[in-house]
Image (cartoon, rainbow, N blue to C red; front, side, top):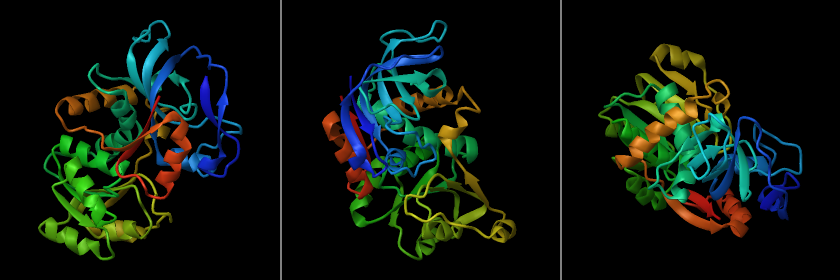
Length: 322
C-alpha cells in the first residue's frame, strides 16, 4: 500500500513516499480503508520531533482519518463496510490504517468522508474543551482565539451548538469572512490591546470562556477579558511561546485556567470518542457542525499541505483525499 514515511525530524520535507505492507490489526483494533486524511498542527509538530509523541524513525505519521471498515473484532458493534472516523497517534498517512476501538466514531451515511476527517481532531478537541473541561452553558459568551484556523472554526460552531454567543478573534482582516462563515456573532482582529474591544462587545462584563489554541502574548491579554468565574481553556500554543500566569490573578478575580488535551484523555475514558461522536453527529444534523475545508489535496501532495499549514497558508481546514 502507499504511505508517507517520516525518515528524519526535519519537518514535512522528511516525508518520503513508500510502498509498505498492509498493517495487521490487533485484538481490539479495526482495519480501515482510508478515504480522507485531515491535516493538523500536531502532524506538523510530529514531523519536526516537537510533538508529545515522538516515534522511533522511520515511522508513518498521521492522526486523523476517515474511511470504511475492512475488518472489525467480534462484539465491537462494527462490521465490514461501516463508515467511521478515527484519531490515531500514528499511521494515518497511508491507504490503510489500524485503529483502536476507543479511538473510533461511526459517521452518518450522508456525511462526506472529507468532512468526517475534518472533524476528528479539531471538533473532538474543542468539544472536550468546552463541554468536559469548560462546562459550557447555553447563553454564555465565548471568545474564540485563532478563529480563522481549523480549531477556531470548529470552536465557533460547537459553541453555537451549545447555545453560546461567540466572539471570534482572528489574526488579520482576510480571516474575518472565514470566522463569519463559521457562525461567529462578532469578529475582531487580535491586535495588542484587544481586551478593550472584547469588553465593549460583551457589554463591559467580559466573557465566560476563552478558547485559546495560540498562547504566547495573547494568553495574557485574554485573561483580562474573563468575567468572574470565567474559564480560559488552554488547547495549544500555535503562536509560539508557552505563556505563564501568576496565580494570584486567578485568586483575586475568581477565574480559572483549564488544560484540555483530548488525545491524552482517551486512555482515561475509552468511551469518550463515541460519546462525543454522537453529540457531534447531532450538531451536524442540526446544521451547526460544518467543517470549513479551505483546501483539498491529493495524496501525493500531502507534504505540500503540511508545508502550507506551517506558513499559515490555509484558511480553515486542509484535507487530503484518497
